[in-house]
Length: 254
Image (tube, rainbow, N blue to C red; front, side):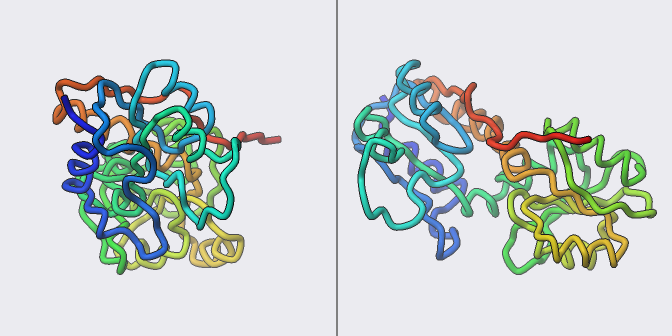
């Protein structure tokens, strides 16, 4: 039977932990590496509802994108997710920035979710951005609606632009400051998240269609493909995608 460390080693093979950013904390973060695993739960974030779900379905391991321990832990108490996981005997492996840049990782999955063709990497200095083509041209407003439907996001902030959209750059999560690389690569539009106000001003000035499609929704596209890879590698283990993992934000428009 597969053990927790077997899953760690497999993820390290497809998204090497040594490639993570210096500020990141990806890796095997909670639990016993020698524990046998019959069931794994996948989620973008490890929240208390996700841990409860893992306990209810009998999962010995949770694999997440965002690290359950990020900054230095200065205290341990019942509201601490790492504490709760240890208390429940649930191991946690988190693959964050190493999965962002990996082949088949977050940004390849976002590009695939948008059904882009001829996908290639953009030289952005970090290995994050991908660029590809839509099957047909869309207006900026048509493209916004298209993205919302493809990644199931409740609302999108965007900069309107007159140019028709065919070539699209993507960077899941916080990629606003990389937008000049998207423009220089010849993209007609750029899909990312967590864009700062001053960058929206610059993008509007440049008449460039940029979509802030939400951190959760732009990155959650990796979970189903990762589950499929794990299921193919670990045939003796049940791989489950969380049903309670959700975008913490809600969207309202007047």
